[in-house]
Length: 549
Picture 1 (cartoon, rainbow, N blue to C red):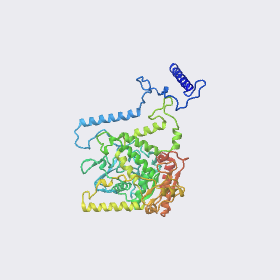
Picture 2 (cartoon, rainbow, N blue to C red):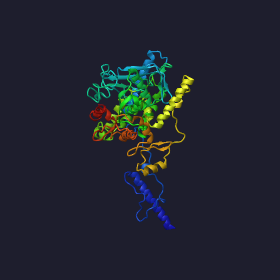
Picture 3 (cartoon, rainbow, N blue to C red):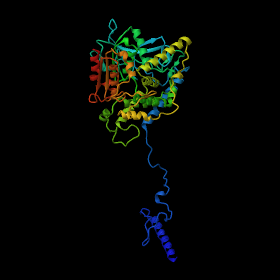
Picture 4 (cartoon, rainbow, N blue to C red):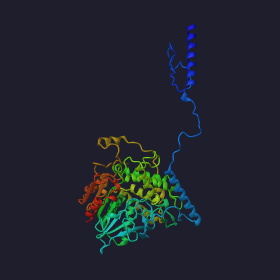
């Protein structure tokens, strides 16, 4: 008993000595498991509870541990919002506003002088909407011959205007300046070239920012849903006006390549040759997804206001982000590796959360240039038309039936004929998407992996590298069995991968067409990705010139 008392006393003395040592020299590391001379070390359970030094409350000096980050990129957006808000207030103070047509801080979206074709004949659209009248802005180059057989209709990409080349009325360089002219791809010594701004756009043709003649207010999101074929049918109204019965060629790249095919499918007897560059015959999941997130960026901008921002602050923040996303899809990784690498804008400055790497500053600049030069609602509507694009037979039959039903309703009911805009609005499914194991097994069996599927209600209809086009698409393109067609793709294109152009060419050949010329530029020939059609005068321009003759 006495020995136990001595041991306990010794432990207390040792513990007290350790505590005094810690207090007098806190920098000295302590081992709390260390035993006094001749003693066994204490187990963790037996050690008395005491607070470690790092458990002590921090001493507050009143100053933060680190300075706050600066965000000049956010400051710039807020500054632009403030400027636009001031402009809106000034416009409101200077005039009495009676409706939504009054001008405000949003830009006019004009790109210079154009010709305007006005149609008073209503245009019934594929998904039930109607334009009681509409305008088509267009520009021309070259001379139309006496029998009007040398006409080329040049189709635009998503956000392009009709200004493909400079004119006397508008000497600014156009978006295809080096491809149009004497001896060039579209040789104006031979051909009369017409380029239009599509309906739904904002560069002179009727779109969401236009005035609805029925009530004198801007359409905004009362504008009806569009399809690529709707755009083409409006263009052929212009051709009727100009007395053009048949085109020498329908030419386009990107969305223009979709229109080029759609024009020939809708009016096969009125199109001679077809040129489709970096496009597809039906939109695929990846490009649909990329356009979806661009629209989402705009819709999530509070200034979008469900499309009713005219006369107020436009959704410039969402538009900037949408353009940055789009720019990523327009170029290629290998090009950016060579162009930017991992270089920073200023290596002598510390890293920043705002644009810092050169590639970030490039994207930021692309967004800045675009955010106030194109109508956000136009981007929403035109990009959705691209998503809906499908030249398969089943879709064509369904659309024609829907339009015929709508025409009948208008004849019998007059006015709206029972049409409701809500009928064109998509709703979220009741249950979220879930992976389908049976499709995974199918792709694994075929060696396709899980990344390229396209699902419909009838199961897999995947068509990709090494796969034959679906029979439905072959049937849909069968009306082009005798048309000379030039199809071009670019290996570095990630938005419209080269296999999608191979799908067009193969589907046409399977439909019996023996006049299909298909070319694919390798990465060695072009690293510019989807934008190759804007930049490669030698390869793209040369092939187009040779094909047109």
